[in-house]
Image (tube, rainbow, N blue to C red; front, top):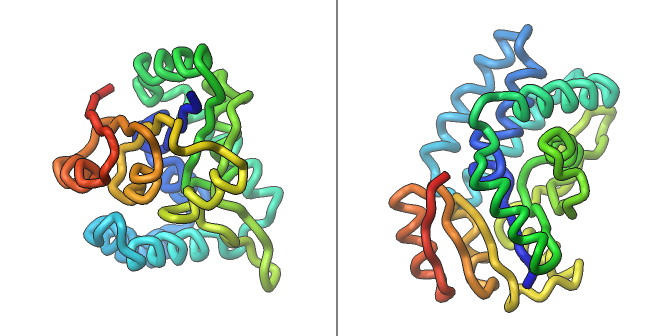
Length: 213
């Protein structure tokens, strides 16, 4: 059986991209003030809505203005190290779940976070060998931006392109935005899910159970 893990909320209690945005703009209070309303609106929007995805893309694009690729990668390594060393950010139960999954088949991390950030964090926690499908960073008009946002149906499409048999896959997630992937998988385990997330994913038509770690 193939096992799929979301990253934020499952293998990292912290939101990895949010941590990176704060780090990149920690000395730019006006930029943070500009971003803050969009962050709040995204939190209020439905996790499955195009509005939330659009606001998140705008937030990241705004945070990346004026940041060089070298600065970005330096920040990625710093943030990954900070998150990996933060107490309780990577739960022992999450480590056990990965180790158990390795024993029965391939393991993938499927995340909306940016790929180099996800990969750096996984290396820091000792799982740099995991296969990663994530959002992609590119350069447009001399500015860094997310060119592919790996969220919602994009996760399903990416896994199918990688020839992963979703009908024989176990999926760990904390977010209702993963409803489409949950529908496609054989089983889903909701990790630390909100009441709304549990309600939405319970209707996904697949076997679902909840856990906390």
